Structures are given as C-alpha cells and as structure tokens.
Length: 232
Length: 160
Image (cartoon, rainbow over all chains, first blue to last red; front, side, top):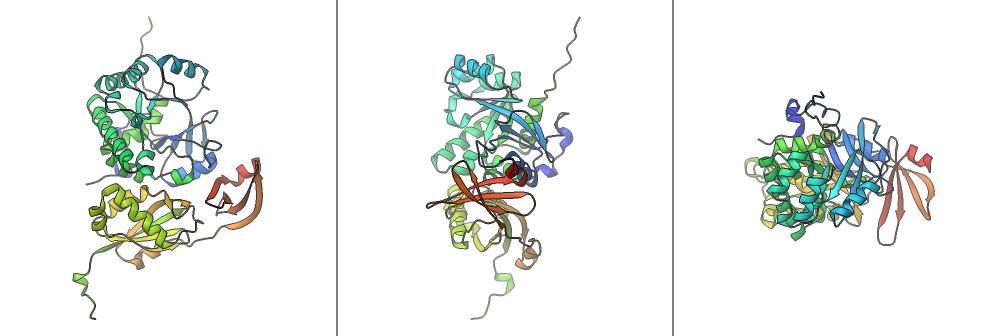
C-alpha cells in the first residue's frame, strides 16, 4: 500500500526535525525569481510544507508558519576555486556546492565543509560512486534530488536524471547518505505539494522512508546531532 | 440507441485540481493537450491510452479531469509535471477525487475572481495589478508573445 508523509510515523525522525518536518531544500525568491518570500510562504504552507531553504536571503526567518533557512550556492570547476568561492560567499545556514566529476566530488566531500551536494544529474554515472557515498555519509553531507529535472525536462534528459537518482537512492540505502528533495522553484508555479514530492520521488526510486527523511533533512543539516565530546 | 447498462460502463474517477495562477486564461482544449502530452512523455503512449484522461471543465481556477478507476495516483503524478498550458506557465494541484461529478462539485469552493487595482511600475516595466483573495497580489504584464507575472503580497507592494 502506498503511504504519504501525512500517514507516516514521524517518531522515527531524529529530534530537532519537528519544526521543519517537511522542507523544500531549494527555492529562489524575488529578485532571483518572480515570487516574493511572503508569497512563497503562503503557497508552501498551503501545499503542506513547514520550511524551505531560500537562496539569496540574508538570514533565516519565519514567515507565517513557514521557517526559511538562508542558503548559498557555490559552483566552481576546481577544488581551489571552490574553497575561494566559499570563503568569499555570504554567510548562510545551508551551503550547497555543485557537483563535478568523480575526482572533484571526492575532493570536495573529503576536504570542504558544506551541507548539500547539488546538481548530481548533470554529472556522469561514475561521478558519485561508493567512495563518494561513504565520504558523504561519514561527513553528514546530503545529496540533493532536484525534482525540477523530472518536472520540467522530458525525453533523454529526464531519463538521464531518473537514472542518476535511482543510483543515488540505491547508494543512500546502502551507505546511509542523507538525501534532500528540492523543487528549485523560482515562481509559485514551480511549487509542488508534499504529496507530489512523494509521488515524484517514488519515480526517482526513493522508498517511503527515504522520502520522509529527505523532507526533514534540511533541519537535520542545520542543527546536526553530534555525539558528546568529553573535554579533559 | 439504448444506453449502456451501469455494469457495462467504464468505472470513471473524477479529479478536481486547483489551477495556479487562477486567472490564467487556458481553454479546456489546451489543458487537455498539455496533460495528455505530459502523460505520454512520462509514462509512454500505452499507459496514457490506458488512463483515458480527459478534461471535463477548465475555468474559475479549477480543472476537472476524468480518468479510469485505479489510475488516479498516476494521473496525480502526471499533473505534478504539467508546467505549461497554452501560452501560460501554470501548476495543477489536485485536491479532490470522486466517483461522481455531483459529489466532486460539492467539494469545489466558490471562486472569487481577481479585482483590478490599477497599474504599477517596477523598474522600466508597467504591470497591471490583480488583487487575489486575502493578501495576494499578482502583477501581470501582457506581452506580444507571452504573459509575464510577478507574485507579491500587499505588504511587498507597499515596500516598493
């Protein structure tokens, strides 16, 4: 039987995820998009979300019942350029880095501190393998499933994206890599409901449990639960 | 011709969806082609044929569809992939499913059309203001090829 997030058992989630138990991992409010943050808040609440990562806002805020975390995106061809870009980037709650080839991804996942690896659908099949998956799982870095690729693309591009997402879902199940789900919305016409997210994620090969954790992942990334350190 | 007895008729399910933005002037024909095109693109022609989706009505911010019973979930997935209809960028959010049109129409809320609130200028562009229910304000610019819109709240408009 197919289950939707409303029917699932939220007690399985780690503590701290309840404030944003369903969050869109990437939206672009005005001026990058055509919809303001307040309007996004109303639309997201109507569609069942309690939070989102908004790229370009100066700091995190709460509008109505929706919590927005500030996000910044870094796209760089080399590890050095990536490090420089992160140094110069505005301080944000969630830092996202665009994926590259296998060597770049391994170097970034192993050496740089950030939260979400985005744009994995642009890379080839070998760019995110079991080594990268282990590194991401060990360092608590999430991999983003950008649903706008399934929504707005068609033909070969959509097939490639689905293929890559199936691989990532499999690696996530095996190595425990965190996933996030994002709409990449720049307008209210790009916002989808939690139910639509679930259905599209199922197409991408995610299980119910993975969808539930992926929707709660931005909050978990923002306030990770680390083990207690004993200071002597 | 004698009508088919109820046992021999197909089992239809009717799905009501919210059209975003509600003022978008899309005809039922354009909407049908958009949905069937997305269906064929996502699931292939054979599955699209098995769903037998058709648009019953499209207007007042609500689209009512018909499909074969058992394919509602797939139809909802297809509706999530609809991005354009006619010349407009739209989104469809299904909110009710029923076995009869009569029961479905009871679940559709009455539509309040947007009221025009004059014009405003942002940058070098002039937009027509459409006041939607509540705090929502849509700024629409009618172009030669396509309509562009900005989606604001009343408070955002006061900030400009």
